Amino acid sequence: MVTDSTLPMPSDITAIKSRLWAAADKLRANMDAAEYKHLVLGLIFLKFISDAFQSKRIELTRRFGDPDDEYYLSNADAALVASELEDRDYYREANVFWVPEAARWEALRAAAKQPDIGKRIDDALAEIEAANPKLKNILDKRFARAQLPDGKLGELVDLVSTIGFGDDPGTARDVLGQVY
Image 1 (cartoon, rainbow, N blue to C red):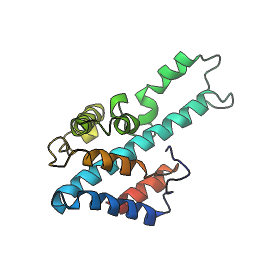
Image 2 (cartoon, rainbow, N blue to C red):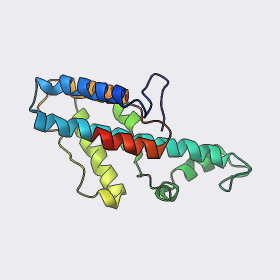
Image 3 (cartoon, rainbow, N blue to C red):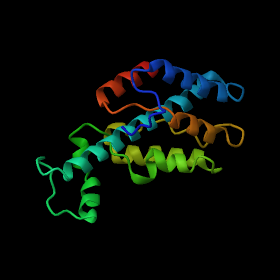
């Protein structure tokens, strides 16, 4: 998964817990705990699957350019690589959820300050469900209906953006399990 050196690594569960506590603090005065846990955990899941997806894209890009790799694309131009990166089979074989372009974390993060961020998140979750039959009717799409003061949901997106799940999908799943 894509990480920044300032983000906690999966083994640093304490840092993740502190960020989750900060997320809860952002919402605590505005809604009941039973409600904000769904918002925070929903965003954490969305960040997790987006990080896993992006990590796989980075791995595939590297493999497409490695002459010793079975995925090597000889004489591949940027258009061919871009096309191959959008082939869902590469992600399915690695048990990575397909994340449509508009639903990827960076697209949501870029729109975090927009007044319709809740609707954008709900739409992203709907797109992810449509692209991944295993998730059909499972993801909780309540972000557009959240009764939050202006800007709070965007602040939460920014805060969740600081959580990194690392490069090892197995370890990241363990961390996600502990978070839940």
